[in-house]
Image (cartoon, rainbow, N blue to C red):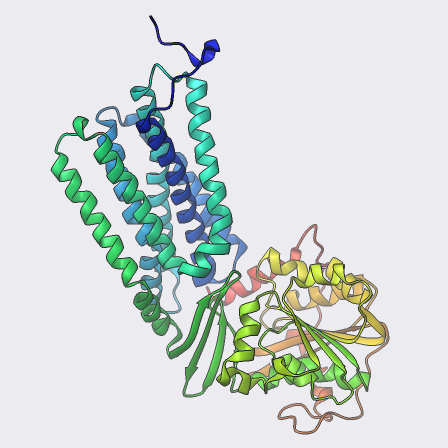
Length: 525
């Protein structure tokens, strides 16, 4: 009697163990493939700067390589299981080691020339993507050959793609929330490389009767597992070595949070904070930046009682704001809880911010600033300090838009001031004036000024207010950089930093992100 067809409506036979495991392997394969894709994009962001262009081109290259791999699978006609096993081992080896190899290369290649690293990175992306693209077509053909009586074409495609997409979904959620925070990028890559090797080992055992040269395949599986397991055990040492080489001084603290890579280093000149490889402050001159950021607005108000700091999880801006006896409450909204924990618990760092995050007047809120402002429409502040990273991607760029500044305006008390860190008016001149135009587009007056910060160069700020800003009559005692006579110099823009035409940055266009990337990109060419 012929075997009933699934398409005929007859009861389907029970799923065989080999079939179930083969479908489960599709889930694992999809998870591994997406991890390598996400890891490559994250590495491009961490090591080359947080750039939308870099992340997009890495993902695009990876997907194109997967398409190439799928096309090449048509030329594999014999020994499908053996070929599948070899590809799984190659994927596990290349994909698993890629983050570790890129970290090592970035630390070892000469600084100042990113071209060799880019070639290596995109070569690795194309290689891994091509191998991943070979996997699913081969699995479908093995399933069709082994279970030809069970599956019609549409059922085969539906089964395989269902497990493929489910694996991708699980990893897409776990990658930022569990994997990277707990394992880090290097160990995450190696862990999923071991999963690919496990799929190869399963295929070796399940189809051992059909495989020629079983011992050779078994030796290859064992060798790949040993290499990946050994690398996994040495991952922390490798990361430490690479970061020590990259930062050029002792690293005191390193951690990958749910939002960013946080590194604190210490050298002869002082302590530095890096987020995703980008310098945020140097202890030798951070006082210049934070005094310039906070005091022109705070002192001009006269007696601010309620202050809001957006960003600034290191507590340095809060330290300056708390120098005013009139301050009754300071709310600090910082997205990353690890930042506020680190700068409220580590003795060296609490010494830098003078224990500002432990002040009884300060309340820490770990939330997205945009969302927090929307959810607290009744909160009003005399001074709002906006201390975000530069607008190097769309996620941060939204915090420099007309929509965001309109929210800031809604939370500004009558006669209040908001001040915004606004990148370099010398290096990123149009970007700086784009922020000024954006502030003015929501009906606020913009008062631009700048200060020289040795670690960054010429740096810009903008005061946003409903009333004209007036030079304060006094400043808090004990400042190391800012003086009343010196304020006039901060307001003077020489010709090479003078205003240029710019359009407002809106959520619908994010022109600032593109302008910023173009201007700062010229510095690194």
